[in-house]
Image: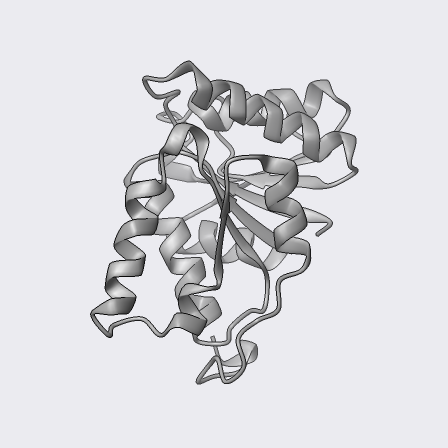
Length: 193
């Protein structure tokens, strides 16, 4: 996992532990010589994560849609900032550059990025590990819901297992390092995406 795409909120959220986690993730990635790839903003958890990585001497790549440069205040101090035309291009470029994906707390945009990358894994578009950093139990209701969806027969257990979860970032990375894609995943080769 040399480059980790981090999906997270463009606001800091209501619990200070969310901001602490974003800073910890950015600094940890830099200290372990991993590149942070994220949404390119300078605000919220996105900005905190990027600033912490940069402060620790890390490489940070941002990808932001042109229409969101002002709203998310495109970060001016990154190693690379890619301005794209659409959200689809943003997600595709982040997915192509990353070797792993981690979701921190966030809202609809974070969920969209997370579920799209999980869907792509299920379809066999990529074999990369995916993790949820369960800061202060933020993702516990989602994990319970995913388990319920498995019970209801809409997600196979082998695909549910693609979503790794832990409340400690270093432990989550260890779990993700051992990740093996499910056998039989996919309906198309990556070039057919």
